[in-house]
Image (cartoon, rainbow, N blue to C red; front, side, top):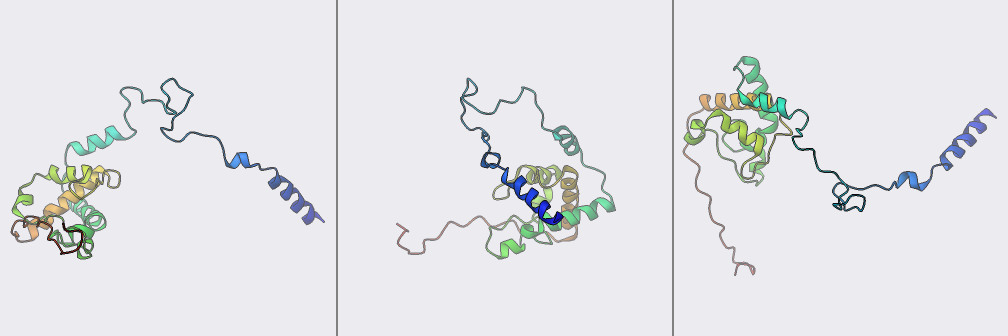
Length: 179
């Protein structure tokens, strides 16, 4: 008897839910609206607004940390996760993604990248470069420095390779669209 009463109360409570609770009126980001004089639904940011954590990230990127065994171990782990799929485990630019047809990144073992300042690698991870998209939202600043330290270790352990070959122009295949 009590079980039936509980079931009936639960059914009554669920029947009280109306469709307007599921489909609530709202504006999506930057959707036009008549609420404000400028016609927008979102308000502009207050001048001088800084994203949460942005100042700490900027400070962490300002100076490289001291290179320690722990930093290199962290760098290797992060490199294997974020960089090795394209750049390969040795930094030669022959990762698994490249073996499956993705454009090859430059080898870290060339004279040009051996001579590049450490900040270059951090900035490329932060902002992206060429086909590589930015990793600023995926890799914390301290880990970017750790990865850079590990890249330097890879460079020190491997012999120099010749510079990258210039990109080849697309060769027409003789298809109908090659006019």
